[in-house]
Amino acid sequence: MSLPAGMQASNHKKDYLCRMSTILKSPQGSFTIMNELVLPNDTNTLNNLMGGRLLHWMDIAAAISAQKHCNNIVVTASVDNVSFRHAIKLGDVITIEAKVTRAFSTSMEVRLDVWAENIPSGTRVRSNEAYYTFVAIDANGKTVPVPEILPESEPEKKLFDGALRRRQLRLVLAGKMKAHDATELKALFLNQEGL
Ligand SMILES: CC(=O)SCCNC(=O)CCNC(=O)[C@H](O)C(C)(C)COP(=O)(O)OP(=O)(O)OC[C@H]1O[C@@H](n2cnc3c(N)ncnc32)[C@H](O)[C@@H]1OP(=O)(O)O
Image (cartoon, rainbow, N blue to C red):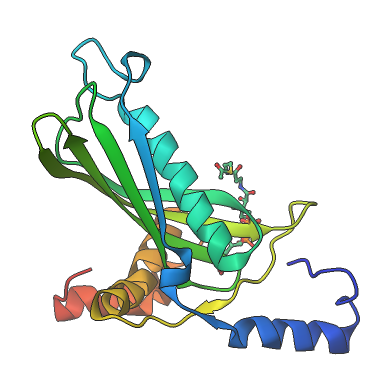
């Protein structure tokens, strides 16, 4: 993990890490809305939005959200649980909402919700959801600590709680955590609670 210039000495380093871990930011501070219009170059031969184009737009919205939370450069570490409920048609207007659910040491989970709107007909459907994980890095690509999050509303608290289990699942599947260390995830299967 890298620290800003002047924070390398051990006392300064301790102070800096302590300060970052005690900065509490609201999820609302990272809230991001992005709109896109589905044009012919975004669609397949059925005039449906290509999934990859949507994932690209979601990545940008989520990265902006993560940057707002940590005020730093971020990189995408993982993309999970992307649902495609409805095909999105040529001419639809996409609304992507992104918000950080929880921050860990250097990583942040961002929840995305996507709506597709046909303005002439006045229809709007919820089309996609996903969780993206970002890691804050410095100009040399070294990871840097991020501020903590203090959830306020009930939905934010629910997403905050679930984020720990989702993190354990993605790290176990990525081979970055041993299954027996995923305590909260294991409890989920024993207690039968929702993710
Ligand atoms: C916005 C964009 O599109 S950026 C372009 C696409 N993304 C990239 O190019 C990123 C390329 N990957 C990387 O740079 C690195 O793999 C990184 C920075 C993501 C992780 O680097 P690592 O050396 O594995 O770092 P390390 O093991 O110390 O982990 C750092 C953090 O990343 C998290 N992390 C690592 N791998 C994953 C993963 N597969 N899924 C989720 N989180 C992960 C760790 O949990 C850790 O988080 P924490 O500090 O909050 O506990």
